[in-house]
Length: 152
Image (cartoon, rainbow, N blue to C red; front, side, top):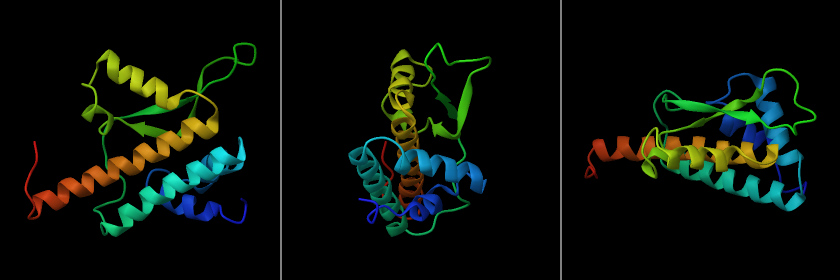
């Protein structure tokens, strides 16, 4: 499995959302260096496929879409939690999720909770995929505005 996973590929994909190389390396390590091997391989595959689709759509404008995002909390068991809660350096964009649930709704809060819960390799892979989906939706909108039909 380790021959299949190339962390530098994820590092390059996450750069628009995480300009700090050390923070990015930490998140990449959490996604593809922690947890069961089948999770690492599955997360790597899905994030890379979304990255390939993004590349296929051509260059976007100005990196990562700028919109509201929420922190991905570092969830520690109660006996290990000390002081203020801490967050991972990757955030979760809300724009793609508001396609499924209205902004400010309990449904949206539940989606966010589901995506950010669990061990680091789950929560960060989910956040990375939502970042890429956000960029894909932005490129789709830009393409529709440049000559395609606008959808409601």
